[in-house]
Image (tube, rainbow, N blue to C red; front, side, top):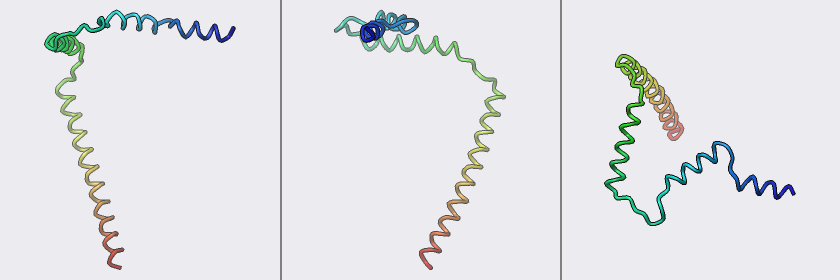
Length: 98
């Protein structure tokens, strides 16, 4: 009896999953139906334009500030890595000579 219930529930998706699967099936094309490349590309461009209207672009001052933070972080990280590289290479050369 428990196996029957498990099989039935596995065969029937419920809730949001069921509606998502139905929507995905409705978007599928029939077997062998090919969409021309140009049509797919134009559809892609239309969808890109729609999504780009939904983007919230930051103000210029915020972009400049974030860029400055990134550049400072890169300088600090490169100095840190460069210092340790210098120390380790010096240490390795001393060990090889001694």
